[in-house]
Length: 303
Image (cartoon, rainbow, N blue to C red; front, side, top):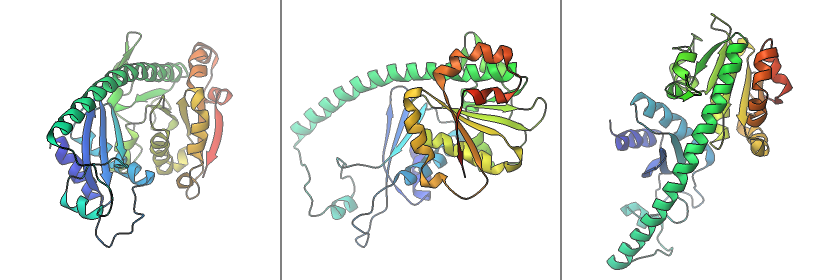
């Protein structure tokens, strides 16, 4: 299926309207959604963060299944400056001010918007390259430490083609995820977790890691929580690896109501990526098992 078809069927299948699809340089795929509207709909009906997260998770699965090439997915609401593109849009916003432009003005605005978009794409491409490099380096550090401690390492399937310092992730990683008897939808999500450590030769999870240099912390937590709730008897540890400047953001996401209550304890730790990189050689040389990470991690337990 085409990207348009996948996005339309996924978004509408979840009960939302697809407003816009936009691709940007650096592999960013931006999907804009809205809640279906009827004259009886409440005036304060708006898309929430939870709505965006729900669509994001389902779209990630659908895009992976169809092999759609993208680096980062962003799902959001239309916002204030939204286009009126359907008959229902005009009925919905009757009584509000709308900006109407003639052809010449429209052309000028399109050209100005294109120029701004081009500049933004260039800046984003540079930022994406830097982020991808930092993300790859952090994954490589986790792979090195895991292997040095004697664990089998599994790298996210969409990152298997990466290399760092001349080493291919495909050669350092297990080719398939060890059998954890996961539901198919959870299995596909878990395979996107950045790095997993397993007991050598056994399907026993030791640690799971999500590297979040600048991407969504919340989605990373959700992926690991899905895994934690699916294997409650494995007593694994879960870690977010992010720059130290994001620590307050990490804590804020951990305290979200959606992550509190219900289910088994979720042992989640935060590891500053800079400290992890600095201590890599020492951890590889002197570490005995995964408990060595407890000296670096700033832990939080989520129910």
